Image (cartoon, rainbow, N blue to C red; front, side):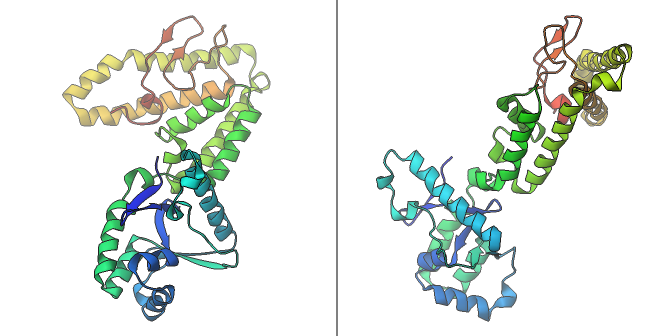
Length: 314
């Protein structure tokens, strides 16, 4: 994924705050051909027209420190993608924030539009149009989060791998990807990061409990629960042809009733994880990608659609 936009024949680093492309006051002034003080004066004289969180963000304290750190990481990432960091143009070296800065204003697309309207110059309107097309609306950039915004999630992932014997790092990431229906961890929206962290901690609790199954059940009860989970999965997946037929007859009904199948599959999976159900060969009842079901008796369902465990299948 590139983090560069072409503005006036110059490559510019795209800066994000809370997964929103933003510009500093210095950048905005430079693009629009005015000075920083003019941007500040326009803000102070038109405070009622600028809403924090909509037209701009104002960051201080630890949030500012984290933002500056993310800018440094962005610059480092750009250098890695270049064969020689000396080939980087000044605009590609990242936004520079003075160490003396205590309050930083970041302008969103709407804020940049307001300033273009107030300046009302050909350069301001021309540049804003380029920013609108190439900077603010880069779809492959908009939905992605930066690694600095995912620190809590990375920490939770590391804890999950450290506290369980069932998952390696790759398998743990696959569980998270599947839960949020993404191909890469940076595709999880910024607002969903706390939810993802909570989900990982839930997995930690489930996997931790799996080692305690002997104290929860005697052997016969444990086997009874395992057989019940296998029966639920077997019944649901043997009925797939029926669901396909219902899909052709009445899609609305199929979508409604399939929810019960998905919920029961999801619950069976949670139970299998919590109690550590495995075959004699050590294969989990449901693999980490939710594409194979391994029954203790030797039967195996392969090519399973993972969506049957956490989302509507169609």
